[in-house]
Image (cartoon, rainbow, N blue to C red; front, top):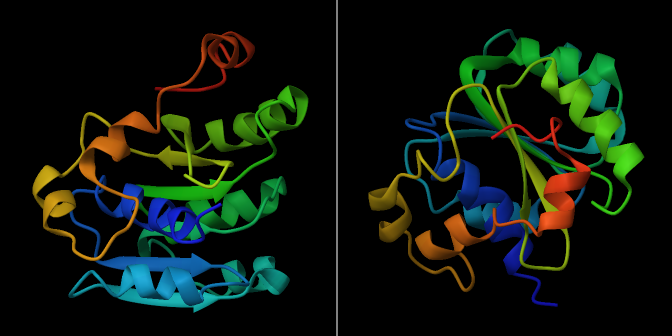
Length: 184
């Protein structure tokens, strides 16, 4: 597996989907590679935190503070997502890890919790053999892709505007398994 693919996909998909991201929170125990990718964006305020005290971090964050949140952990705690909803802005989006798509029961629970807060919930391939979930209050990851921002990025080894759109293609069995749960 290419180690550069996952951080590029976790970072650039949301950053090139949101119309005007200015404030970002990254919650990860391995944020070094995510920091490299976030450094490609100018005039962005980024806060980094580790996942070990997720609820504490979220409780101590101000209301409506973030345009984008990257959650590099699997979490099915409804309290955590209630806090995430509180600290993100009205047009925000998040990317989070989730159970393997073959675990339909765990993913359905996870996506139903997210469905309380987001209009759009779409899994996508991270380029390293896993999928992530993009959850958005307003922006659609393929319809609202900011091509100019995506095309002007430099230094990626995996991500580009074509990959951005392509990673949202899902096999038919996934569509059937998640009918009514995935929101696109």
